[in-house]
Every structure is written in C-alpha cells, then in structure tokens.
Image (spheres, one colour):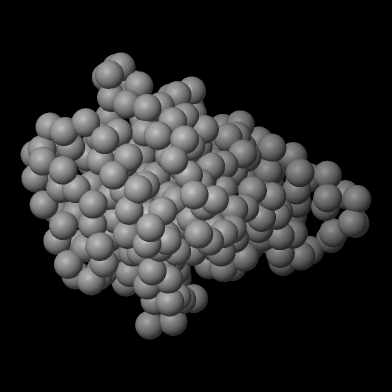
Length: 297
C-alpha cells in the first residue's frame, strides 16, 4: 500500500467528520462574520482546541481580506494552505546515527511503536538496536524481545526490576562498539505523580549524554490520538522533566480527533515526527504535513 493511501485511510474517521462539516460550511458561498464563527465551532468540535481554532479562523480572515478572496472554494484552498503551514512550521528530521528515547504514559502504545519504528528504519536500510529500558512493567522486556525477533535486530535487556539507567549504560557501551544507525530506548510508562519514574527519565538522559559516541539524540513522546486534547497536558508534564524533541502520534486510524495535531504544532511548538497508521508492523510512517493537510480537507 502506498504511503499516501495509508495516511488517507488512517485519517478516514477524522476526515469524514471534518470534511462533511467543512463542505456544508463552504457550500453556503458567503464569507461573512457568521462564516468565521461557524469555522471556529467546526475546528473546536474536531478537537483542534479553542486557542488554535481561534488563531486559524483569524488568520484565514486576515488573508482572505489581504488577498481579496471572493469565492468559498478559494477560501477553502487558503485554509488548507494555513493548515499545512501550521504543521510545516514545526518539523524534525532524524539524522543518523541516532539515539531515540521513547517516553509517555501507560497505554499509549510505546513498545508497539518501538517495534514499528524498528521496521520503518530497517525498510530504509538502517541498522537498529533496541534497549529494554522498561524494567518496571511485568513482561515489558519480553514484549520488546518479541519485536526484536520479528524485526531480526539486537536487543539489550536486563532482568525485571533492574535499574533502567544500568540497562541504558550497557546499551551505550554496546553501541559504541557496534555503531548501529539507530539505538531505540523503550521506557516505562509513567504519570507525573510517579516522581521516582519521572526522575528516572532524567537519569537515563544523563547516562546517554555522558556515554554518547557522537550520535544525534532525540526524546520522542508517544501520544494516543484517541485522547484528543488530553494529549496536550502530557506534553506539558513531560517537557518539565525532559526536553521533548518531537511526537509519535499513535492510533490515528482509530479516532475522529486528528485535529489535535494542529494544537500540538501551534500551542506547544513540537513537531509530529511519526504517525501510527494501523495495527500492522509496517503501519508507522514519517509525518508529512502536506499529505496530512491534503487528506484532511
């Protein structure tokens, strides 16, 4: 299946709801004050968020007047451009060799995302090593071991309950010798109320910084797209403990709340780097802002 088609299918629920409302709005033909109020309501109902919805509506108003747009169709194309520009303003390109630490709360699909990312990198000819940094959850290491076997890549792991930073230390020593293109560190799911686990992230980060062998380091937070605006508070919480470089948006295919992508870019200035487009191993893609905008409207 082509990349464009996979994104189209992943956005089906969001697009069907969003486009139906947008088509009804733009079919009125007249662009007046009521039009912009209705546009804000549609954006908010699509989980874009109040602040971002108002900003996008106001930007469209300004550009419609500045560019002397007269038809609803041209205004629609202008809105699509604004959405694409919003997403393109925050981008992140993974440079190799790379160390990627995947963080997030419980249940967002971190370990599964690590497995899918491994497959994605391997499909591009990259060598990958996995690090079982989740020593807290029962069977987490076994789950990651299964992904390593399926992808035929090396995994560094310790026994359950071990010090996660110690696992990462051993992984860094191995990576210094083997020099994989990508080292992916899985971590335990945690809430901000679990102070010990949040502090553990800082400890893992310090080990990586101290033992780094010249690789580019990225910390990516996995967010469940089905939670919509609730995902934003997770960015804020984790960013206070570790610097988040970008987002892995999971379960995009299972929600009509894909509008949260715009809030993430506008309000938190964090780029979407990868999106989960389904349940299969190969259903993880690099995020493309233009494809997203084209498939949304």
